[in-house]
Length: 156
Image 1 (cartoon, rainbow, N blue to C red):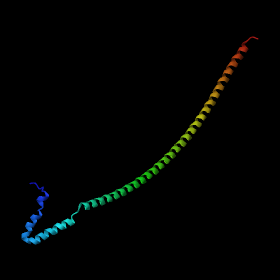
Image 2: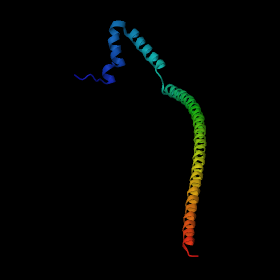
Image 3: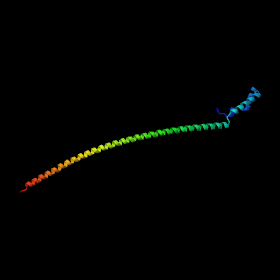
């Protein structure tokens, strides 16, 4: 069974209503009732101009609301942007401080290692001088002994 109807099938015509109401109400009363309904419907029905005015009013309201939402969103975006900039600057300054601290520690450690190496080099130099002096003193003593033995062994 198909339940789709056209408006003409659902609504009786004015003539059909008149014919149905005439036996029950009388000819004059049926005509008066139908005229009253017709004028009442015409007065209460929205005209095209009414619909256009409502559409224009709705468009204006929507534009205002969209503008309001847009300005609120712009404010929120500006607020978030400024907060992000502040946070970035904070992180940047913290990183600079940390880098400065690391550089300071690196320079301190480098100075400590350098002074330790200098001390070690001086110690090695001193040891080399001692051993070198001992070597040459030993060589001179051996040569002096050999010369003394040679000079003693020579006939006079």
